[in-house]
Structure formats: structure tokens, C-alpha cells
Length: 139
Image (cartoon, rainbow, N blue to C red; front, side, top):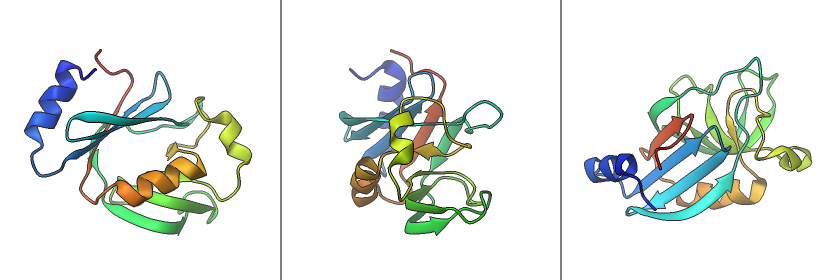
């Protein structure tokens, strides 16, 4: 069900048929196309002592592999960057050790997804896609 807030946002963004909403309280990413919810994805956002930025963003970078500027060149895969300084993005990691913690706050600020979901998003999400990160979506 699309809430009034999401309806308003979707109706005001005519240039893109895609919308991503990350809800921190449930550690869930919601992927919409043409106003319809296509997929819910478990994520990990910032653990205590770190911050996942909240607000409205756009996907400004898209790379199959990047190396973290903030984490000793850690390899990140399926990178969908949403800050111009390259510090924050939606991504997966090359190994699967972290995937057992999806659905819990366990990152250093980025939005982590599984390798499978990262690949799925990477294939679909276009540059310029609106991303909203919020504590809790209006229902």
C-alpha cells in the first residue's frame, strides 16, 4: 500500500519511474517502479557510533566495484552512490559473512544489501533515481 507521502513523492517526480525508500526503523529498502512496490529488501544501516544520513538523495554514482575512501580501501560491490563525496552508498560486500546481520543495524553508515539483492538493484536502478532515507515511513 502506498502512503500519502509516497504518493505525493511519486506524483511529483515525473522524470524517473523509480523510487527507493530506506526505512531505518525496520532496516528495509522498498523499491518502487511506476508507483508500484516491486521489492522489499532487508538492509543494514549504521550501527551505534556511526550515522546513515537521512533525507532525500539521488543516485549519483553507479560502479560494479569501488574501494571505500573511509574504510581502508575495503572492496564494495554493486555500488549505488548517493552522496557526491562518495562516502555513502547502497552496496554489497564480496563475501557473505555480513549477510547474517541484514535486518539489523550493522554498517558504518552505508546501506548494505545482500550480494543477490545488490546485483538485482544494480541491474535496475538508473542514475538520478530518487532515494529517501527515513527513520519510519508514514503508513
